[in-house]
Amino acid sequence: MSEQTTDTAPRSVPAAPTSPKSRSGLLGLGKKDLSLFLIVAVLTMLAPFILNPFPEGSELAQFNAGYPDLMQRFVIFGIFAIGFNILFGLTGYLSFGHAAFLGVGSYAAIWSMKLLTLNIIPSIIFAVIVAGLFSVVVGYISLRRTGIYFSILTLAFAQMSYALAYSVLTPLTGGETGLQIKATDTPLLSNLAEGEIGRANFFGLDMRTSLEIDAGAWLWTFNTGYYVAAVVMLISFYLAIRIFRSPFGMMLRAVKSNQQRVNYTGLNSKPYTLAAFVISGMYAGLAGGLMVAMDTQVGPERMFWTASGEVVLMTILGGAGTLIGPVLGAGLIKYMENIISKINDNILHGWFAFLPDGIEDALVFLIHPFIGKGWHLTLGIVFMLVVIFLPGGLVEGGQRIARLFGKRKKKAAPGGTDPEHHPQPTPHVGE
Image (cartoon, rainbow, N blue to C red; front, side, top):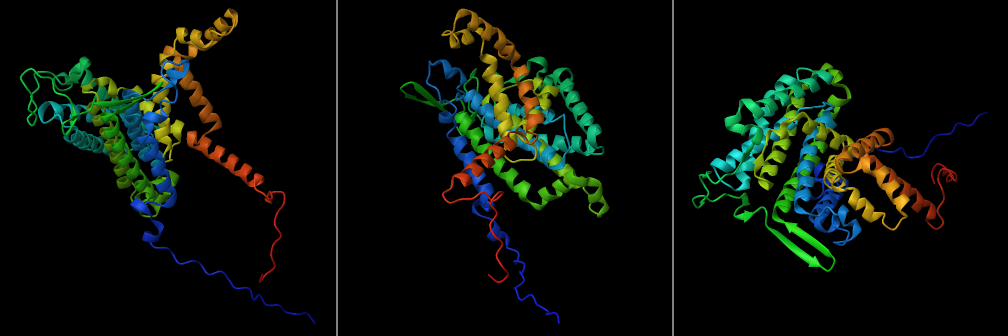
């Protein structure tokens, strides 16, 4: 007679859904997002120290990047890439025309300074608004198509904008020479002496003002313009996190996964994609306005197709669809553009002077094509390596390194076992 056994083990009860308040921490962010935001904030605020690791006058000082102009470019193009990632990373729509919004925002900002006030806050606001309105028009037309056709439409709009700024709208754009603040400009809300050339300011504080700290062999520069741009970048990064984690962000991911299936459910995805496009364009306008705030000169080259291609490279190099990836990609490209491009044969000879002449000349000959004007070749090689071996960009590389060190720590722990080779015994029911 067979015995019948009953399973008396308690069944697991699904946990009650947590409230939004319990899931959110400080600033409405989850634990991981808050940690990421705080890390970015600390690195941004301490950038003058972090980017100047080598003593002044040393052979390695060439690699220091802690000077105001370059640090400003890091954060401004970081904003540009963050905005582009909201469109490309979340929806999968690849735009080759985002430089148009960067340029439109720049022109709006410079005209605000020439006519209204030299305070950068109104000029940045005007840049965001005008770029947003322009992106509504471009997005409404371009989003009627998808895939490569969408990309070509955005590229066409960018090139038309460049042509208009370069020649047709010369009275508004300054044509080939561009626009800048002149002694003849008399902003309505700025008190300038006759013949005085105005300077961009933040409520009277000149953007070029810097505090230099000389600590022996090190020189650290704390620039007003950089910290204003850095605070704006942190706000932009925070808003991007909220967008990524919101229901709106989830809808954009659904569009990227399968837009046709989303439409079959009865949801109209067009308003969501248009909203993402406009938000992305406003980010680009914000970056354009900040560029004018740091350097009050605007030219049509900001709207050229290569500028649009550059932000695509930034996003893919860093990691499309990730939060921190576009910022890392922007930093890498701007670092190579400003540091690697300045290395020349004389610097190389100085580095290898301790070697025999024949070996020294051979090394200089081999490295020469990759430095100076050849920095694009180095960037191309880096881009190929990332695409082939790290499809997820620099963020994926960081994750792999973190996992590698995590495994080593587990193996090195006292009394620890490798779960893959020494699995723990399964407990009996009821234990």
